[in-house]
Image: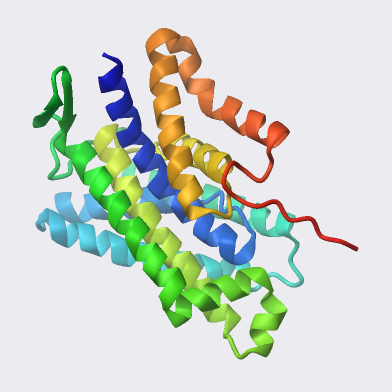
Length: 290
């Protein structure tokens, strides 16, 4: 029984972690929390749904089309919403992302309606494989674990060995010094938003297959992914992955023993971490000296 709870908790936690990575990439680059992240993933998933059900294209065409749209959407929001802001403060940029969130939710409600829709992935919940006695894992969970592992390996190589990854790290550490060194900071920001939107769309399609698709379906996953990011550390990608696993297991155990408390676990995690260790479990806490 508890073994099954752990496996299921780790699988949903891996999905939280992937979506949390999307939040962290933007934060690591610009120190802005993108509250429109969930709605960007939502509308990209609706694009995949539209391609599947209106045009009748195969799933993988819709999948790739949605990811391409997600990249364009991320770049569009950075260029058209954030970049024109004059001498923006962090709070001002956060307010802009909240405005983008409401705009995207309204657009999705207008285009596809507010009713719930089914969105299926090729990875079935019903096809299971026995890990050991009494514990099984389904294809959806296997696909989530593979996606999280591949993403982690790719990000490690990207940030450590590529010029663009190093440029993103330099921009996060000191934007003005990065400009002096010849890094085109605006392009780095656009890439970060496009890349983050792509990762968010990946997670969004997995969340839609697990529940239902509607304009508000990503609000709870965003909260849980944000809690995983806060728990692991908003500046630590490995920390977010570990935080997602911890949160997924914690939610499953609380939901099993005290079902009424499960919806507020993410809130309690955010409050507890901010009170005890604001930088998270796996990120360093820096203090600016003035």
